[in-house]
Image (tube, rainbow, N blue to C red; front, side, top):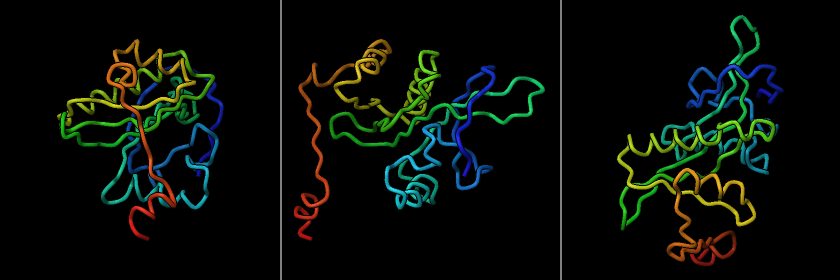
Length: 176
């Protein structure tokens, strides 16, 4: 597994889908977690299987800083966007951006916006009627960015609240 490393040069930023040339589909994790985007090491194999297996449950965009002409260093991963497709009985086919991350030292340079715009292009290419995402109430910077890009806050506009069944509550519902 590759480690995230500092990027020396900011020549260009590309947002791409990890390709088959990378072992197991991963590149250096910008969070410095050695590819573990979850907090539990045992989840690493599930992350690989779920995203890069025969029937992927999610897709991932990777933002890289490209080296300058003649530089020997490889592209440097500085962020990512993890998304998947959902379906709404009211709106039809939709896309959900589960996670977006840009290394702190690269924020404010348009990388997050580029990831979001790329997800929007994927959504349109796949015939989606909407692009959804969630943000924690303390992350005002992200909320401001999403609103500036044209997102509507559904909590304010429609009163939607998110709920989650986890662990024991989910087992109890399932009768297990």
